[in-house]
Amino acid sequence: MKVLVIDDDVGMTTAVARGLTSEGFTVELADNGIDGLWRAREGGHDVIVLDIMLPGMSGYRVCAELRADGDWTPVLMLTAKDGDLDEAEALDTGADDYLVKPFSFPVLVARLHALLRRAALGSPPATSVGDLRMDVRARRAWIGEAQLPLTSREFDVLAFFLHHTGQLLSKSDILAGVWQDDFEGDPNIVEVYIARLRRKIAALTATPVIETVRGAGYRLG
Image 1: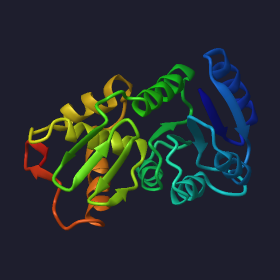
Image 2 (image 1 turned 60 degrees about the vertical axis):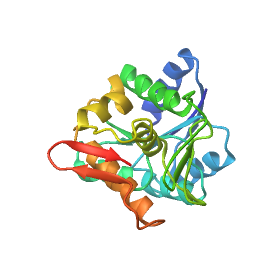
Image 3 (image 1 turned 45 degrees about the vertical axis):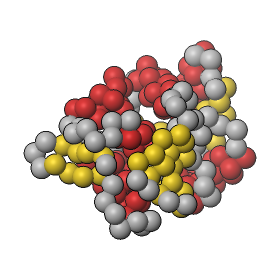
Image 4 (image 1 turned 120 degrees about the vertical axis):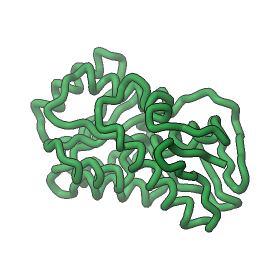
């Protein structure tokens, strides 16, 4: 698997590159946002590790530019502060996950493997409910004929709902089914992703897709 690490902390990236190489990854490095965006656009990466604070161009902008290009390579955003605003902005710009610095190397590897596993889920190819249709192997989703622009994590949340159509799902159910054993953060992250999915779906249809059952959870269909 090929990983692109975009960070200007040379000491950290050298150590991370050495460690990831020993774990079987092929690692490419960039030390500024402009070069990182160029390398990301060259393609061929299975996952991108992206720092927020970069010279030339912020990680937020790099991620937003990639998503605007239609590039949905999984992005793990690095933030130096344990702050809700950093995390929320990382997700809003299209990142799939975030990790707070300083982090342990085993946690980084676990997060990367989790993103790669989700990107390679071998589920039944096409499933639909109402106007929503998903091709799980191709990792694409549509409302009617319009494609939904989803990040890797957004796709997994929606696919989990689709595989449990009509069932009432609690936050704990969704965390266990999507984040599994690599989740260490606030369980309210589920609300963040559902809000993002609803916003993207609402841009294509007026028909609600994900229902909130007050005090109990959520339901699709």
